[in-house]
Structures are given as C-alpha cells and as structure tokens.
Image 1 (cartoon, rainbow, N blue to C red):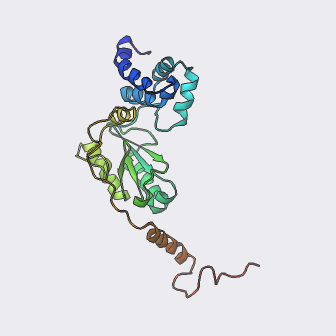
Image 2 (cartoon, one colour):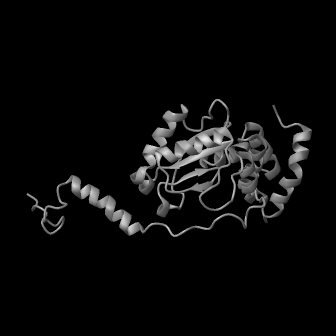
Image 3 (tube, rainbow, N blue to C red):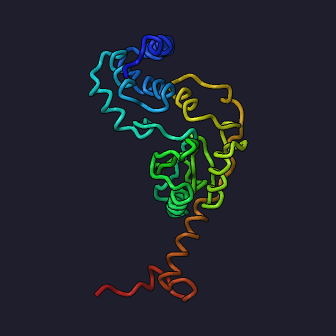
Length: 235
C-alpha cells in the first residue's frame, strides 16, 4: 500500500531538512533511507518509491543502494538488532562461536526476529573495535569482550526488558527505529553521555597468545625448536 497523504505529511518536514543539507538532492539518499526505515522499521517498497520521488531518481536507483548496504533491511527485524562481528580477529577470538550459539539459543536465522519481536541477529563485518574482540553490537552500540555466555545473558535481558547499557558510548540503548532516526541525522540527547573507550588489552600480547596456540598444535612450543630457524628443509 502506497504512503497515504498523512504519511507523506509526517515525513515531509524532516525529509526537507535532510535534502537541504546537500548541494544535490541525490546526495541525501542514505539519510533519507534511514528516515523511512525509522518510520516503518525497514525499507519497504513504499519507502523506496517515496525516496525516489523526493530525490528525482528512479526506483531502480534507490533499490540498488538499499540492496548494497546491509544496514538497510527489506523486512522487519527485532526491536533490538544484534550484530555479531565474525571478521578475522573477532572470529578467531570467539565471534563465530558466539553467533552459532545465539542462533541455537534464540532459534532464529539471519535478520529473523524472535517470536516476541524483541531480538534479531546477523553477522557483521569489522566494527572497528578489534582491541575489544569479540565485539557484539546492539542497534550499533558496542558490547566488548563478549563470550557465548555473556551474549546469551545480553539477549535474554533485552527480551525481558532489563536495563541494558553498552560497554562504551551512549549511556543507554535506543530501539531499532530510534537508532535509524539518529542515523538520518536527528540525534538524541546522549551524544555527550556514557563512557569513552577504555584502554584495551595489548593486541600484540593477545596475538602472541593466539599464535602460541597454533604453534603448540604443531609441536613447536616447549620443544626447544625455533619455528623458522629449525623448520625442516623443503624437499
């Protein structure tokens, strides 16, 4: 069903503010998509049509952008969308295990909300928090140094309505639609609150520990041999 005149009227003021920020209207596409996602909880076909009309573009142009960026959802997700980083370092430090455990614990697939509509999950690429790996995000707020156990406790708390605060950044979580409105360029009152990043563990030390695990598996550790100097000659 196309947007009603009331829907358009409610979007019009903020859409106008977004477009006015840019010298060319089409440059406003990303925040405008966040605006329609804030309204519906995802980017519907109606939302795509609305953005195309506002920006003087074809619906195909807008759809190409929506389908490229995974932050835009084409179907409803949970009130709290949980992203588990499974990029290289987080995966090595336990991100893959966290994601697999969450899928089993919640009984959902990627971007699929739980039956109560509270939580959905997805794999995400690097969150630029490698020093705190494994990192989990909820509506784009950081939860650092997570484990399968602490992540289960996190989602259970979200589903029960517990007061859950990010490890750093904003002092409280917003819901999925509120997060989309912030990304559209309409911030809430939390920009100066919360905790700043704390000194993370030494990455070099952690990498040495991970490397030692691999060397032990290969019989190098505690053998008196050097992994490079005493490597057997190639035949």
